[in-house]
Length: 113
Length: 114
Image (cartoon, rainbow over all chains, first blue to last red; front, side, top):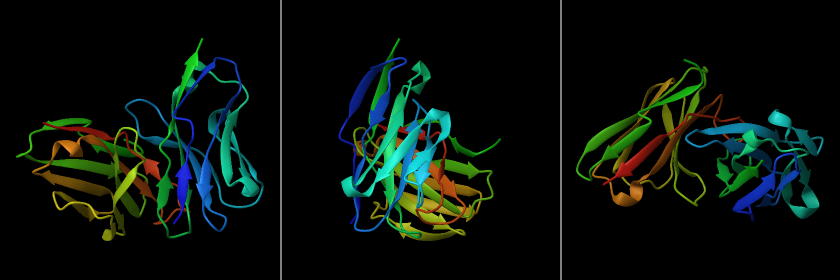
């Protein structure tokens, strides 16, 4: 069965610094991969997704993620973090077209001015 | 209203109460989902409805009872809950069922069972 691991529970960065959030998955074939963002008191909003093709995926709000099959990773990056990026970031993996999504435990991002 | 809406946003109920959570999607989607989000745990899928038919029941206790009267509305009926059921309950919808379809989430209902 597929699984998702987000090794970092909590990350703190300064505004303007670069950001990388880690996501590792376990699945035999190429999975569907997603990053969601959740602000306090809100539901999840999709940042970006990878199904196939170019392994570097651009998303909303200036985020990007890179699929690395050899490392079973799909890390989320942003070159310069803004205070408004403070939120919970959740990685998810799907095994197939009709399969359900499996979510990671999330990484809480705190941004200092 | 646009997107996925959920009411109420907050709910406090005793263990002997009966209440219902409501979800409405204005996106023309055919699949709807209930998730449970507890602190420090990943989202847990509870139920999936596709074209108003329940296609997944993820071993959820019978004190949770879903209802999907049409493709735009989804309810979660609650009765005789336990304190460990306190959590954020999220509704989502998508064009079709399955992980290849983007899911759109509502803001959630924060449930506290006393």
